[in-house]
Length: 310
Image: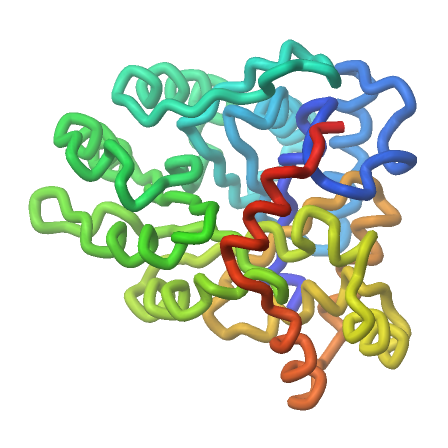
């Protein structure tokens, strides 16, 4: 199971993010140097535990820079690196920024960000994803952008997309049929799935069946399932002698279509607790109890949108 887990750097590459549970886990002073050290510490621990997939994005502050420096220093060549383009980080390394990231799915943005990503990560970049694709996104009508993505795929980089929001399933299904020169453009997809928001599950199963590599993000609902767990989740965790975070991630690992399940841990203790998921085997009754925690997608995403950047 450890081989199916990866590390996401969304909460380690910038000083502010919406994940709960970062206070006390990150350095008191979130300077660039302190955050780099924290990221490297978690990356080292993840590698030692057997994780070989790391996910970043241009909008994750300095995540790509931190990752590139760590790979250069350690010399690891067996790490699969995925990153994303489309959002730009504009938070200026401030906790109190009015705006932290700005989205633009255009050909100029792709060219600019892909050049910077490849400058940092070089041939270690294995998967490049459109960050938070929507079913009505401009990529579906932009032939020049599609061609640029296909050209990158021809160089050996897998092209993927991530999804967010209550309409994830529709986005996944529309993207599955996007072709350039008769060839499927996307070979990877990264979506939010957790026991509170499982609505994209069937679409991800379809994507997996069609050969796409499926990554799952936000398995802990941005930390809610670790910090504010429902009673049923607490009871199952107590029965297994692990944290609620481990049970929530075990529920993701139980899905056969989930190829890579990302942990967003920001400290070694959080990572250790998350990775206990690999030891948890959920019974049918436990899985049913967790399935019953699902909330309406619109309600879930309203709650997520209200989380503060801290």
